[in-house]
Length: 126
Image (tube, rainbow, N blue to C red; front, side):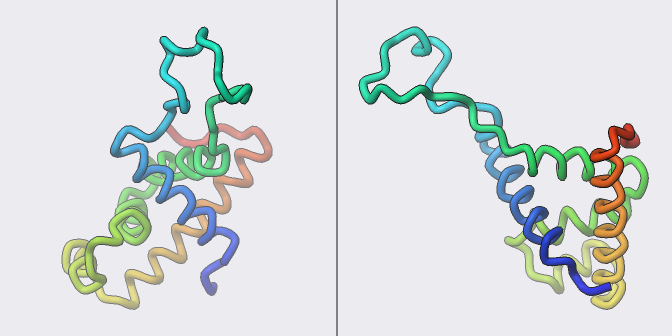
């Protein structure tokens, strides 16, 4: 199966979201808690920005880490570790380039299945 551009887009969105979270960017509003009662000079009401699409993918990645750690590792390296060259990723994972992309494809299929489960209110593996 060729890479599904819809899923790749969602995975890239998740990777950016999760990477920002690694440096403290997840879950923090634009204003700190102690300033919530202070009037806002612009008249704009600030609210917490929630990236529901990234949260869904994150839940799917958690399920993947439980059900198929080998595929989770490959997907994590592929989307979250853009600072590492492909050759180094292949060496760390211990597979050839063809196997790497087959594993990404398998993981994409599982993630799409997990997304379907979420849409049907079926609990994901924990």
